Length: 87
Image (cartoon, one colour):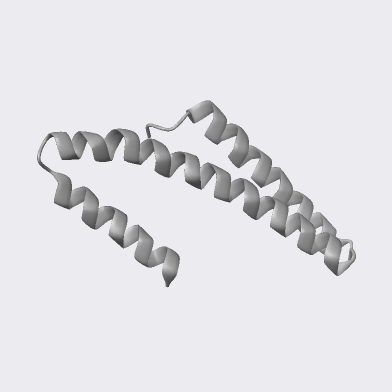
């Protein structure tokens, strides 16, 4: 992985902590909107790390593929991911 591993690890650990907190909130029968706000916060962290990983991939792996003549492979890979996002 070409992304900043320390930053990605920190964000994923934070999201994991938030997920653990969500489980506890549900077990404690907390107010629905409090649970929902925690879900949104967790999603925001996952979106952030997702963007960081994709940016690093485009700037390194995809760039290298274009420079070595393997651009179609990476184009297909990115299109496959975009299809998953829009499905």
